[in-house]
Length: 190
Image: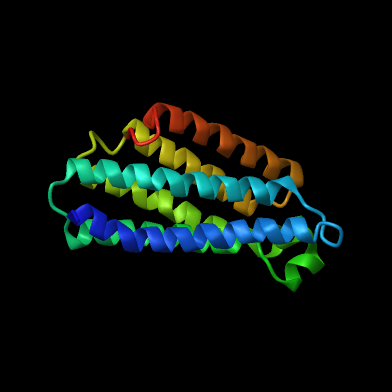
């Protein structure tokens, strides 16, 4: 077993449990759709979080290929990001009676949008990490993408107007997809 295979196991457990929790929220929403109407907005954010969890494994592979030696600061940064994704995935979709009472959109408004805080922090942390890992400049395309994503997350979190929140969510999705195609041309190819 290589060092990378050993180190990625705890990260995979944290991310896997988070993803399972979020997918359980979708199952719960489908089961109780008669009592709690479904809504696309929290499902979209759940899909974004899930896609970034998958993307995180590509990043781990790239970091492993660039670094022959894993250090505690390097591994600690990856663990922090995994925990932030876990928190986001656990908060975005609820699977309890309160979620049924509030409905999917009501639950997002009251509790689910809190998932955007750790999600946004993960993009903020990516900025110094990119530079630390030997990125070209503080103003690199990757860091500019992270700044735009953080701004969109903050906009969606702060706004209370439904159409602005929807527009911010759609913009986040479009920018994310563009970033995935630019920086991750193929799965596993970071």
